[in-house]
Length: 487
Image 1 (spheres, one colour):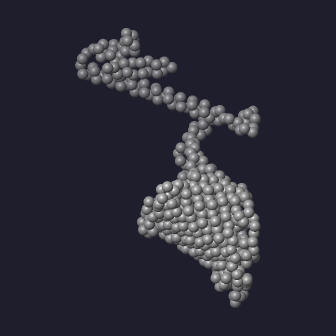
Image 2: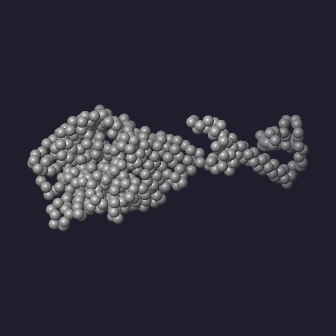
Image 3: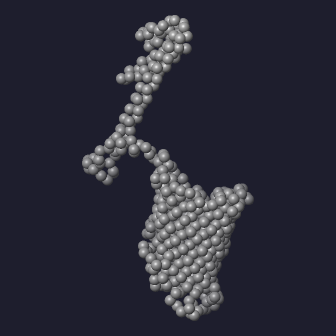
């Protein structure tokens, strides 16, 4: 057996090995023999061994130097040639581009980018994990009959507006920059042109994260859960009346004691209080909101409806929230104006209405079954009315309960993609006035092609409205068919 060494210099490779029979270092059999001391003494053999080790170290150093030169050449070749944009002539591009130095080439090569795809969109990320960008598009195609929006009066029930519509068409970017804990989100709606979300998340610690910008107030499940992850074609009749919707401001949120029976999520925020449609406030009052969620079984549920994950063990939460605001608005929606009025009210003067509201929420998911409910209370105080005016203060009450189940887990012959759901909801726009309630009873059938990213929803609703002046109640049936797809 021969121990071989390879010497590479100036493009020539020379193979060396030690021949124990002739006690020589040989390059090729019969050529270039190097004579060694044939003395069999241990000292001589040890010296020759050291000489061989010295040669080996020199060879290794030369090989390492050559490898480094080759890597630098490859980096320069990969960055020196850049393709011009499609809509710009090559000659113009060459004049506009500055020369690339070796330092620039080396720094650019430090962050190779990889791409991947999931149901949440196309993800680009750097190898060091410090930069990431997810791109997602979401479309909702809907057929409605005889109308789409929730009825609040007898006149609303008389509408005959069967239609096909692009209900939502949204473009979303989110990811992180410089550090994995510095996140960002941007979402734009093409169907109702408005910048819906634009905020930064400083999420260095899971127990204390700061959100800065415009986005949903962490208030209740039905509103915070994306419309693309709902169980029905749309939210209940409770949502429009009691939502605090999207606002501009700061939120501090986090989770403490995870996995314990006293596992909690919390959120607290301060906002301008006019929604996202206006840059400035109408007065010097701000909106304040807070939420406390008890994950009493040790798992925090995401804001997403339906038990698509099939929880082997039950997961549940109980939450309470409160908010107060003074502005010209009595309700909100994500629109260019954003500030809107409840039925029976108008857009007020600056700081006219003091709004106080509270919410209780329960959620449960277990083995394909999901259950949730919310109870809302809201007070509207007209500060311009006299203190003894009977309509100075209005109290509203609303609630819904909703359940869904995948029957496949009880009847295996039923396809796994099928879910059935039921919902009951009511709104009392003035608890001191009789016969003015609005009610909803709905049933839904969902077919999940690829989870919430690609699903078909068919829901039927029985909607009723009471008229406090005529003291009568009327009802109407509504059907909606919706295809929701995200990519």
